[in-house]
Image 1 (cartoon, helix red, strand yellow):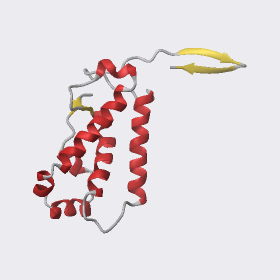
Image 2: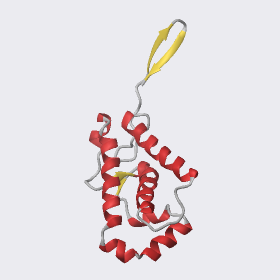
Image 3: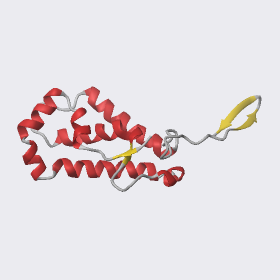
Image 4: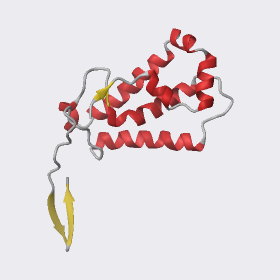
Length: 144
């Protein structure tokens, strides 16, 4: 997998029709002039990079500054969408589905941080996991 720059187009792809219409009505230029979207994307990028770097196994895999691993794109866009929608004049609040998506996005990043979700090397390969076996009263526990 590769490291990518989180973009406005990535974010727009995660907006519902009503969210996108509200975004357009609010004026993409007005929001761009206030750098709302740019700041959101920068903040989310920093959040994702921080979660990835928090696992020392990922330190040698870090991409260029301002990029995120594409394995984290969906989670990043979900978090960015929530921040953007919060800045739009929408009459509807966040739905239960959106709240659950947001919860899962943060959960996914927590799993990246803990190493449960592995980040690929820059060549796209995922390093081998070394497994050892320890027996406890007839049970076998695999340690990764």
